[in-house]
Amino acid sequence: MQPTKLTVRKDKKSLEIAFGDTEIHELSAEMLRVLSPSAEAQGHSPEQRKTIGGKRDVEIMQMEPVGNYAVRITFDDMHNTGIFSWTYLRELGQQKEERWAEHLAELEEKGMAR
Image (tube, rainbow, N blue to C red):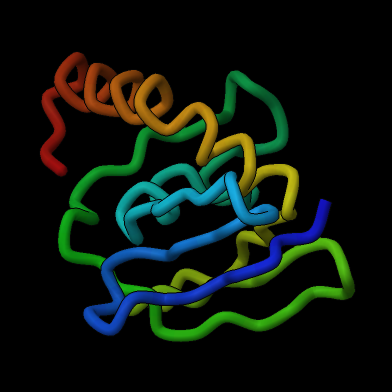
């Protein structure tokens, strides 16, 4: 399902994405950056996935459509290799609290800061 709305907030700290009139999600730039679907973050297998910290103040600089199925987001730390499919963005929105809690727990376990 393609989003009906995809808007970067004025402060560049979050992305609002809507699927129809009733499903609206706000995803922080920090969350999008640390959970980027890029090979840099996810690796090529679950064992290669990296925990990314130090992105609390990251901002969204640019978004570029990728066909009819995704968007490439460029962050102000110049990371831009993640292609965020509509399915992945929807999953992040629907699982936002759980995914974020898992990330924060990983940071704490590894002694890393946001």
